[in-house]
Amino acid sequence: MNFILSSFLSTSINTTMSVVEQGALESVRRYLGGYSSGNIDESMSVIASSAEILLFGTNIDEVFRSTDEVRTALERDAGIMTNIQFGDFRSLHLETAPSLAFVLLEVPVSYEADGQNNNTLMRMGFSLVQEDGMWKISSGMVSVPFGSGSYSF
Image (cartoon, rainbow, N blue to C red; front, side, top):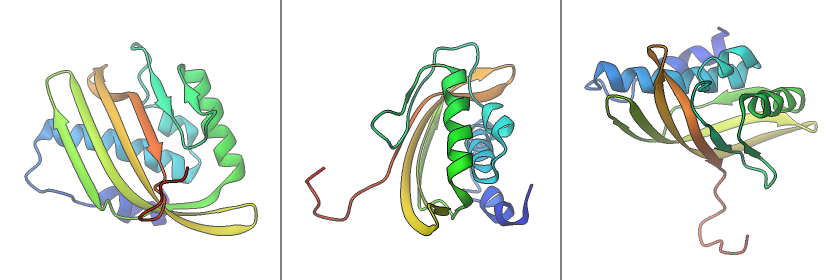
């Protein structure tokens, strides 16, 4: 794990989280940690393989229904974006049941693409299922909000 990610990955949101909630959040952190470091295998390790999946990215054509499609998208992003750094979670909502979890979060991110430094906010929602004793992402979406009062998309 690289040094830049260590504070992000160890950020404590709520010290009263149950072990089950901590496990679901850890899977999301692992996905984001792999994404930011370019470690595709780490991100893919928390994508469900025995359940149907559906993930939406930020671009109009980013609709992923298979692990192969997710891997291809992660590889593409790793080739375009560098120095990805997620900040501390600003907002977090987490719900768990015995075999299903939902994580909704907002996090600032900075990265380099096309020779430019970029800073934005990402909002993400993930549904996770239990698979092989760990939480795995089965659905999710990422959005980048527009400025306040923007209604033209």
